[in-house]
Length: 62
Image 1 (cartoon, one colour):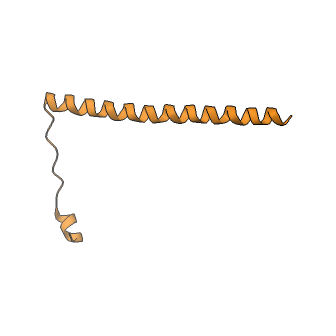
Image 2 (cartoon, rainbow, N blue to C red; image 1 turned 180 degrees about the vertical axis):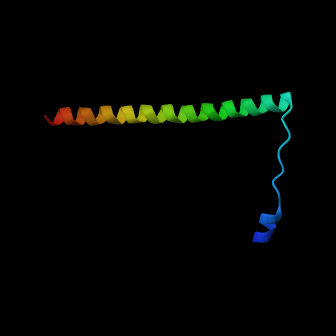
Image 3 (cartoon, one colour; image 1 turned 90 degrees about the vertical axis):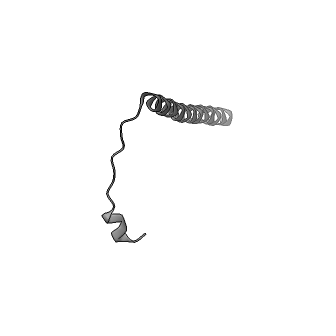
C-alpha cells in the first residue's frame, strides 16, 4: 500500500454487537483479564520468595 491509499480509505464504524456476540466478547475479555491477574500474582509471589531469600542470606552473614 502507498501512503495516499492509507489516507484516502475511510474507517467504517462497526455496527453494534448482537447479544450473543457481546456475550462472547465479554467472556473473551474475562479470560484475558484472568491471564493478566495470574501473571501478576505469579510475579508477586516470585518477588516475595526472592525477598525472603535475600533476608535469609543477610541473617546468615551476621
